[in-house]
Image 1 (cartoon, each protein chain N blue to C red):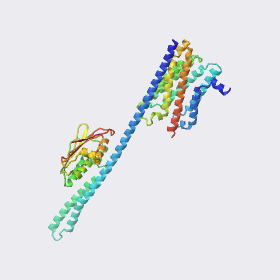
Image 2 (tube, one colour):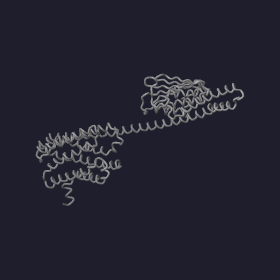
Image 3 (tube, rainbow over the protein chains, first blue to last red):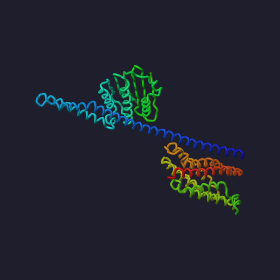
Image 4 (cartoon, rainbow over the protein chains, first blue to last red):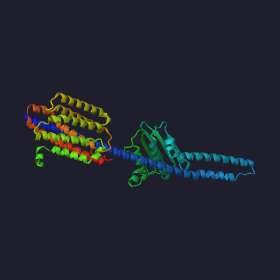
Length: 272
Length: 220
């Protein structure tokens, strides 16, 4: 009997110690995993902030570029016209002078409106102020003013808010797609649409230009812009879909979840 | 008494482990003072003195030392529970405070009702059970918390692990202790001594690691 007791004691002690060690090991492993997850999340947040800042800078840069073009192509022209008008007012002919001054007043009014519109676009936090759909609308109008494209914007009603940071990144993505279309597509028509489902905001941009082979572009090391779009989509947990074929235009769709945590990878699915 | 005889007679491995922990806490005393373990060096002095006196009484003077352990165990286990209390988050603090109260009450009752020269096994079992439970609470909190440091760099995790393993291993023997002594199976005393000694060395080793970790990561 005592021998049996001895083995019982040893057995129980070992069992309890193994149990204790198991619990301690479990705690250590859990803590490691937790810290790893938190570090990954922090890294993702840092990357998100960096991309957000970069997007804001790029939007500002783009805005300055637009202002420069606007000053040169539009405001400068109107101001020159006003100056010429004022120089050529026929002082000897009251009727003609009145007409000229009336024209000049209209031009001045237009100039003031354009300056006001320009000053609104100068705001550093434009997306937050005017909202994503208005910013996209302004972008489309800017493209139309070049008179090289017919751009259209369609926006569904009741688009859910997605937060300023996410909207800024999404707007910058749209701006990048539009810039590429303007530069390379040789399209006549560009269409931008903003729609939503229960959980998603869907931004689609398409053109009827010359198109390109998406897979080929990615395969041969080109498409830095494409990769940039992909990276940004990942940060806002968006799904980026790009469809393009030579001669058949380009279609880009960005689907953004309305409630998201910026820590899950997105995907790019080049479809042909 | 010559040193060799001194070691043969009453200095054991446990005393060396306790002394090593005390020495370590003295070396890093300044760092310890910046944490919640401020009182640890004094507790280690207390433990070492109790152990030396206990060993001296039984090995040199051949007298019972049970009265000494009956008095020191409530202090020892209250201190362990206090450490768990101050390192615990608010969620379980009140439970651990309640445990301390219950434990001191039971120890007090035994002190009054039971003879001092009979070992108060139940007080020890209650103390060990409460420490194990409190450690379980602490581990549960660790799972819930958003700790910045890995657990191996958390000084109290080491002490907690030592306490957990020591008490889990020791409690089995003490639960069976009344049966063993009832039937005079005294040959099991050597088994108890070897289990207890190994676990004590493990406990003081975790104290030393804890102090080293504390000195490395909690100095500022």
